[in-house]
Image (cartoon, rainbow, N blue to C red; front, side):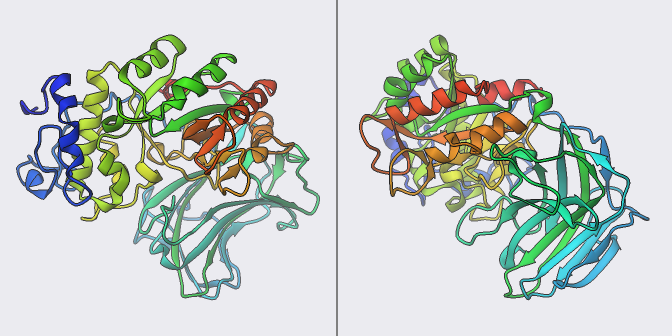
Length: 481
C-alpha cells in the first residue's frame, strides 16, 4: 500500500475539497492523484481490467454459500426438453459452443417477431416445491432486442400453471440481464404474477398449491425488432428463504447519508427495535444536511445500525460508475473502503450510485470491480425480490422510491402495506425484501426519494404487525457465511 493511501484520517478528510474538484472526467483520490488510466499503467499484473491484484482492504470472504440443489436439470445429453413456440426460429438442444456446466447447454434463436420462444418439458415426475425456490442459469447473447423473460410451472401440458415474469428489458437503464453474461435468477413464491386453470393466488398472495408439478417452461420474447439468441444451462430447486426465516425478512436501507436518517428515521425505528443499513457517500459526511461521523457512530454503536458504502467522491456518485474508467471506479471503491475501516465502520457491503453496475467506459463490468472491495453490492432493481442466499450477491435487488407522497412516481407505500402487497407476500411466502429509502421528512414528501415521518411509522408498524424480522444486510449475510 502506498504512503499516500495510508495517510491519517485527518489528512484524508482535509482533502475532501480536493477530491470534489475532479468531476466526472477526472476524479481525484484523497492523495491528490488523478484517478485516470495513468494510474492503471503503474499497477502490477491484473486480474480485472488492468487493476492491481489486491486492494488494501479486500473482502474477508464472508459471502453467501452456494445453495445445493435438491433437484437439478443441467441440460446435458438426454435431458428430454424441447424447444417450442411460434417465436422459435432454430434450436440446438445439445450445444457445445457455450456452457458453464458439464459439456453443453441448450441454445435457441427467436424469430424476431415478438412471439414466445420456449424450452420446456411436460409430463415429468411430479415435484414438490414447498419450501423451495427455482434457480435458473441462462445467457442472452445480445440483449438489444430482448423484451422479457418468463417461467411457467404447472400440470396437464400447462393447462394449469403459475407464471413468473422475472425480467423485462428496458433501454437506458441498468438491467439485471446483460449481453453475453451467464446470469443466475431465483424465483420465489412471493414473485408469482399470474395463475391459470385449476391454480389461483389468494388475496394475500399465497398460491393454491406448491406441489404436484410436472411441467416447466422457460420462455423468451424478443421485441419484434429482430432475433435473440439465448442459452439455458440449468433449472433447479433449492431451499428458499423460508428455510431460514419462515416469515421472510426485511432489510431497511438508506442511501446518500441524509441527516434525517439520524434525526427522524432512527427514533421511529428505535421504537420497534429495528436497525437499518446506511449506504454512505464518504465525501459528503460532515457537510450540509448529511450525517456526521459522530452520528454514524451513534447509529452503529447504540442502535445496531450498519454503516456501509455508496461512494467516496460526491463527483463519482453524481456521474455513476458507468461513466468512469475501471481505474477511476476501483480507486473510488478502494478509498471508500479504507475510509470506512479507518473510521471504525466494518461493513463490507456497498450500494451502486444510482443502482448502476453496467460496464465502465473502458469495458469492465462494475460489479466485478466492486467484488474486489466489498462482499455484496446492492442495486435498485426490483422486478423480483431478493432471496437467501442471493442469486448474484453483487446485484442485490431492492425496491426503491418508497413514498407516501401522491403523484410523485416511485413505489407507493400502500403497495407494500395493503392486503396482498409486498409485506403480505413476504410474510406468507418468505423472501428477503430489501427496501431502499433516502430522505425522511416532516410533512408531505415532494419527491419519490422522500417518505414522511408518518409514512415511515406506518411502514414500521406494518412490518411489526406481520411478525417479519428486520435485519441489516450484514446480518443477512451472516446466515450464509
